[in-house]
Length: 592
Image (tube, rainbow, N blue to C red; front, side, top):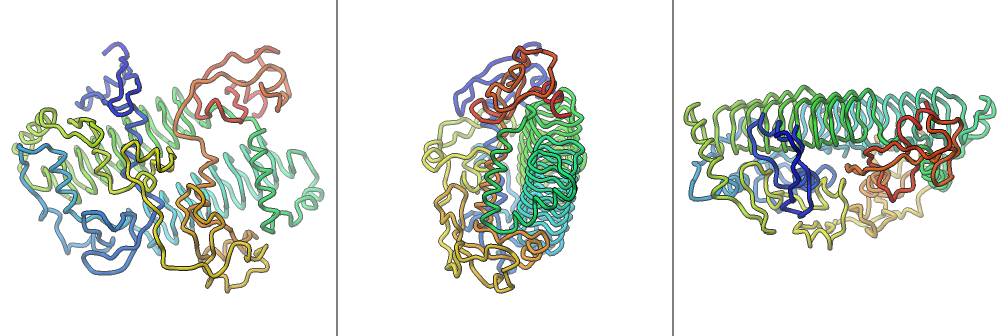
């Protein structure tokens, strides 16, 4: 199609645009155009992934007690990873004939309710029994989306890191704490959007700097204290022991938040990208409306992807080459032509409506298969039978469709109905990226997870904790600490938490006081600082000699002189936010 087309989302009723290149993509992979808008499609996918909320469970095969990202009320059996990967069971035993008298989605749900799932998504890890969506790592604790890392706790999105705690979207770093969207940093605390920084604290948007404190927009600097150049002696005298006690740390954190707001913000954090939009992009080409992505080409509406080409509507793709993926979650490790699927990766090809399949191809509506081909609903066919039946099902999906509780119609070309998700809204990644309250979730037809009643009682309140790590002995490992939030927040507070030995060693090494919030609340507070996975059309806030709000005074004259900059862009900074957002030209004039 040569022209764009505006359609109404059947879920939220808002208008959305399908561009000519989108129609070309749908034609290339032979699927119909979507009936949901990009944001509703994204929420629907994310509803099928839970990274942070763990539940106690018992393996339905061996009886071992473990934890799982699935709640205990799911219909399907939950196996521990050892049993799920073993040859003690055969997913083909659950296979069934396609029934043309019932719609396909209903039959898929019946199969889904029967086939066992692994308790966690974990692969080739060592000493990491409590971390989800973790691969090729060791000593990882409650840190989802971790790859090729060692000694990581309470973090998300850490790739090739060591000794990383309470951080998010961190690459190739070591000894970092409370770090956000940063790469190649060592011995740093409370940093965001930093690269190649060393021995620094409370930094925003700094590059190749070391021994810096409470500063922003630095390039190739050393011994900067509150954005002022000091001598080495002056610097060490100024920082002293000022962030080693908890009270001072909280005061400095508040100052750090104010520092971020007064600093210059480039409209998008992109490195070596061409014709791309979104945020936190590296080495991307023709990647539109993408976030936290690297090494992608011809991508659209993607979040957290690496090494992917010719894909749309994906969440969680990487770390090996993947291509021709559409509308899926946790798909794309040496995969190709995977549509409307979840948790299906590692040398999979030509699979649709699948979940937890590995090293397989030519699958339709299958769950838990490994090293299989020409299967539908976990039943084996030959090539001709498979091809004919697949065509028949696709045709009948448009005639005998599924209707969800809100009246949305599901034909071929839609991801799984959101009510098929085993997770409640605030349990899945929807709440992480699109937070709402319980009332709004219920009104939109989502389920809501109430806080679990836990069988423990705090032995020490947050107020009773030592003010510094120097005053903390090993007895802290025996305490159950009451979370300061006391479930009066929207962060899935667990009311209480414990300190692990790995955690205590790190706090002592980095001279960090014991936290007062549970890991869930710390993650929630950290997520507030992250930009949403949405874009707004805005104009540069450079007014000529200063920013529009007069908070920042430009250091040199820009190309547009004393007049306001006319440049427009797509940015993940919403118009009502307080940050100062400059276009690339104005930002580079001041910072680079």
